[in-house]
Length: 232
Ligand SMILES: [Mg+2]
Image 1 (cartoon, rainbow, N blue to C red):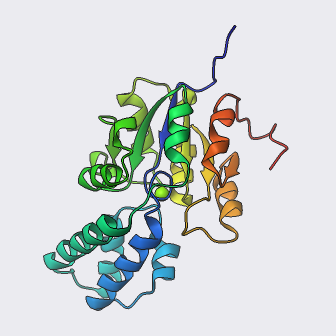
Image 2 (image 1 turned 30 degrees about the vertical axis):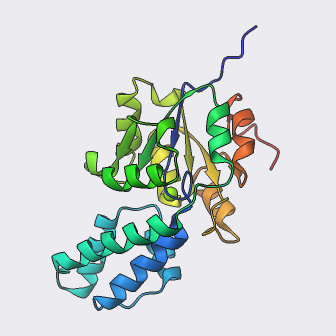
Image 3 (image 1 turned 30 degrees about the horizontal axis):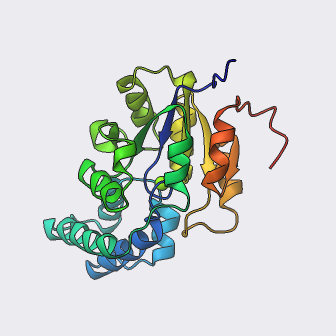
């Protein structure tokens, strides 16, 4: 009996998909930016920078400020996120049992630094599902929404893009995965998600959007052809 899936590799975003980090990160990011003279709320950070790297957020802010932020900015941002994540970071609900049920190979493709990816997945005890297949935007020239990171991850895993399925919670992430020629499932089960997020992910190219990871294993067994999905 064949139970072959149309996908050989499932590529997971980290923040907002594996770990419920985005709400915490947006609060810290807003506090530190404000302290350094760029007044911004957590909601505005969410709106502008969700799914993108801290490096790209910093460059955008510096361009608006017309000055370079001091090195202490990045040091303080990292240290505060380390402390807050160490105290409060949790895995996304039901993710561990879901990972245990998947038959395909898996990897991580994140806008975070390699150190951040390892510490977040270590804190939440998810790292053994993925290591050493942890890929960071720092390893490619252009971060999400460019396709570079997804194509890099697929190449490292020796898998053609057409056999990859991406799980993403952000518009830049969905956009990048689609640009890489991959099918995408949107995820809106993170505590940062708001009404309308599912529509935004669909508009960016997600074939289907789920808010419960327990729905994932059954979906990975079917071809996610955008034109044939009639449910949800
Ligand atoms: Mg994300």
